[in-house]
Amino acid sequence: MTSKQVQTIKDYFEFCVDGKATERVGEYFAADALIHRPDCGTTLRGLEEFEAKLKSCVTERYESVKTTFQRVIETEGEVVVALTHKAENSNTWMGFDVSGKDVTWTSLTYFRFNNEGKIIEEIVERNELSMANQLGLHLDVTKERN
Image 1 (cartoon, rainbow, N blue to C red):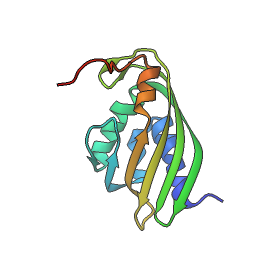
Image 2 (cartoon, rainbow, N blue to C red):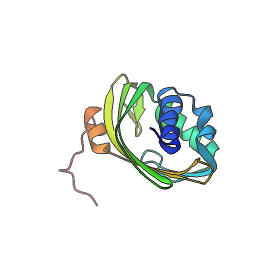
Image 3 (cartoon, rainbow, N blue to C red):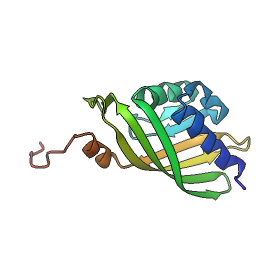
């Protein structure tokens, strides 16, 4: 049987990420939630900021996203999920034009919950180097840095 916390996370990905209904984040996240994502550059605070970045960094960046769960680990008030995201038809990524390219990445995402069952913190760890390589963006490690 799936716990309420795990179902909340699965619903968030199904409806807000894959389904692109970003206006529904308040159903799953507390009003003062903290969001840590590598593609945002700073910690996001609150639903308005989170919804705006979810749109610009995910739902508007890809034509479609499909999330699958590989593993779920749950303790009281916390859930960690191992995910795979498959996104089709990108437009930009980290400021680069990657029009029409597909990308698949894995993620470990940590969630903390409040007593009302809402997510109060999300921490996303994902393989940015693999994403860059798939999108044709290769680091030049031969250049000297100042």
